Image 1 (cartoon, chains in turn cyan, brown):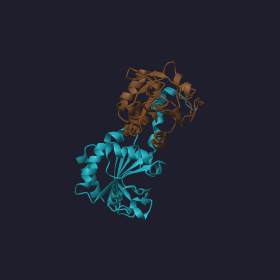
Image 2 (cartoon, each protein chain N blue to C red):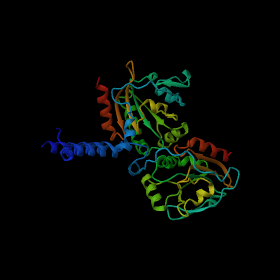
Image 3 (cartoon, one colour):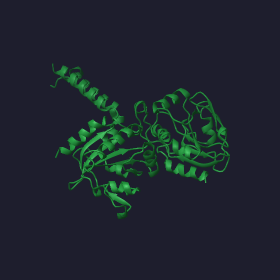
Image 4 (tube, each protein chain N blue to C red):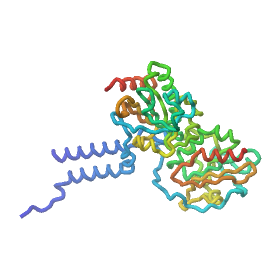
Length: 201
Length: 203
């Protein structure tokens, strides 16, 4: 004869399941956000196609020839490393960090990494007009590009903004050496982070 | 002993899951804003019947604004073009970055001799707290809370749930409606298109 079922015997297991399910149910609204997976360190990134910079000086900065077409691909950039800022004009964190990102650009473009790292920004969900508002408001000197249809954003795994990617350019594929979600903190510290990432194979 | 270990494990796993589910570090809204945004999910793109059209005089109204004053549409007649920006509700997605974007674009509005007038159906305290969380804005923000949505109803942008459409209405210096964009509530209008419409007024 089988023994009678005694629920009390299993209460620890039941409690385990109930608590775990309760935690999962509370998390449920956040799970879709977590399901998006921004590309991160070690992953290859697509050779994105962007509009040719309108200003000749910005095309020259990236080593591009404006007469070569209306668009270019990341792989055409001459520098061995590329730092991409994924931003949005409407994002208040991006607005708050704009001055610091400008400082980072100055530190890179005026220092020993000048010929090593190029910088550009991609305004996800922004029209060219909106990107230009951001550029003018913060006097951004590095090239900014509009991604009004979220095409680049989707290719990068739909990161939240701001998102920074350091990309190694001289490999068969463009490969991410470092990522940073949100503010990167003090410029000198982030410069060290960038240099450390560049040393790694 | 075994039950105690299971209980402990359950508590640890539950806690870990809850902590890991906090919002990501960065988003389209920051600081107090990022913590307070209510997730509405995808809404019916449009849920009202417009009662105004381009070429007609804009119905006048007076509303309380968060600074404690009253704002009247006709006070700008002969002085400024007006962009009336209805947004559905405070502390909701899209709205919570639409106005910070307009805040950044202050110079674009000023260069086009235009004032922006923000309106929601929230009450003054809620609206004030939301704007403070944005860090303040340069344009007047008015409350159409009571009688609830009276102005939104006058323009035909009050939705059936008591919020408003995400709508932009351009009124020229003569008080005539020159452009209307009742936008998909789930999406942000392109500021470039609005600027192009304002450029037409100044030609």
